[in-house]
Image (cartoon, rainbow, N blue to C red; front, side, top):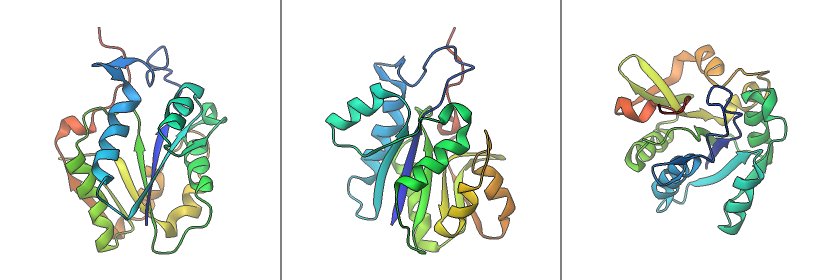
Amino acid sequence: MIHILYLAAGQSRRYGSNKLLDDWNGKPLYRWGLDTIREAIRERDDCTLTVVTCWQEIQSALEEEEIRTADCPDSHLGVSYTIRAGIRSLGSLLEEDYLCFAVADQPNLTPETIDRLLDTAKTHPLTACLASGEFSGNPVLFSEVLAEELCALEGDCGGKAVMRRHPENHLDVPCDPAELEDIDVKAK
């Protein structure tokens, strides 16, 4: 099983307000990636989806749609807390499971790209991520065997630290460079 953890708990410090709830081309920013993931996994029976958030507005909206959420009240302490809250919300994992982390501020992802990343689990890599040229980014896929290492992260250190420790069985999934763009500052 591939457990997708959609990280929507950021504090938007560089943005100046809660960017996840800001309108981005007609809907809240967090909905773009979420809707893309939901479209990508609609026909799949090998995925679960959990939105990890500290924002009551997001939890309430997703509850109405019966989308599973995990509360992360400590997200202000860094992304490691969001990662840990997501993994712990899953309960027991099987050795053949994968964890896929996606961030909620990438509005240009496509369902086809998400699908190609998820399909890499069939080849049993330790890690995989999207990449364009020399740039790599989210979403990122981790074998369950790395769950303990991911849970041991501290502060604002994300999963790339774990990925860098295990280059021996990593796959880059090519994507359009625009898909790797995240929204960190308000448009002027």
